[in-house]
Amino acid sequence: GKGEYDHFMHKEIHEQPTALAQAIEGRIDHGSGRIALEDFEPGTFEGIESVQLVACGTSYHAALYGSLALNAAGIRATALLANEYSVSAPPVDDDTLVIAVSQSGETADTLNALRQARASGARTLTLTNVVGSTAAREADDALFIRAGPEIGVAATKTFSSQAVMLLLLAQRLADDVRGEPHADLDSLLPELAAMPDRIDAILEASTADRVARRYADSESYFFIGRGLGFPVALEGALKFKEITYEHAEGFASGELKHGPLALVTPETPVFAIFTGEEDEKTLKNAEEAQTRGAPVVAVCPEDHRAVAVADDHLRIPETDADLAGLLANVQLQLLSYHAADLLDRPIDKPRNLAKSVTVE
Ligand code: M6R
Image (cartoon, rainbow, N blue to C red; front, side, top):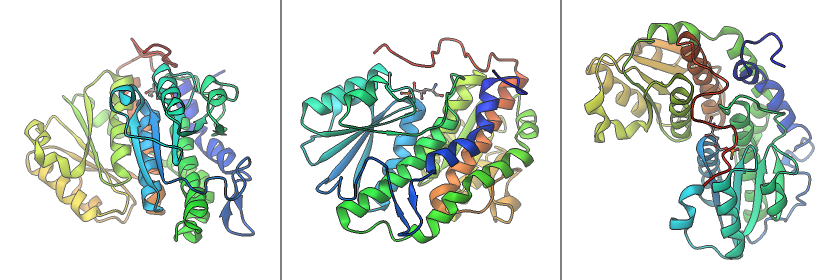
């Protein structure tokens, strides 16, 4: 049941510290300081030359996050919309690892892409929450995010767990393929272990309800980020439109000036995500919107220079650039939740949507 919560979505947002602790549990070898993924002996991924991640919706945003982490670790990776795969798949061979990212493991579009990749000779892996799901059974290998059941149609805790698992997988792949994990592992591993506490801190002190109320009558909601903040901007907008029925869009910060800026007015709040990757550029992009009258809400740590510039602030604890976007995402989940609650939407079952989309 929902316990003390009015909605499963709110409950599942609050389950993220536990979900992430479960995802990481036993998967970091503290002796060697390396990633140990149960079924995958060291060397499992030797010979892999490139990775394609296929997914839909929120899982696609996690896949995009993962592709950036893989590229940063020196592995060629592309995130692809599973529903576009049949018409636009890049070439694959037996040195290609195709990773299906799917909470349910039953999404028809993702299964189709997985089957096509297998038939083309790629090696396949499913990252999912559901043991025994079709995608888990059909891929060569499966890796489980262990987030626990997610009932709300809006994916929340599973996004965080997928992204963290892809960060771990990126290090394992780099270890196997390049003979060494990504150089920053010494700082990343303790930061990963601290994620549950950091998310707890956000859940205890979030002002997302107040911010949601302040901007409740807006025309449109924009989310911007760069680097790992970009998939989070897309995810922030998807969650917002899915449960509030209000128009929302996510952009790469640098894209605003290439068109979307024409839409910006005092009625279009801009939520700017700062992850520590070229933040000065993102701040400049946000200020360009602010000059045109848009209120700017900075999602960043307390002592960040964006706080003084922005009209409002959603605070996240300091962490690695690899993880800051996931903390920002928790604030954006709460923002969408409270905005939808104010509008009295059926949060756990938005109109026209299903938890698991089993049609093409
Ligand atoms: O089960 P999956 O992860 O394959 O589902 C993919 C999408 O249908 C899903 O993430 C959808 O976008 C969510 N409702 C978004 O909150």
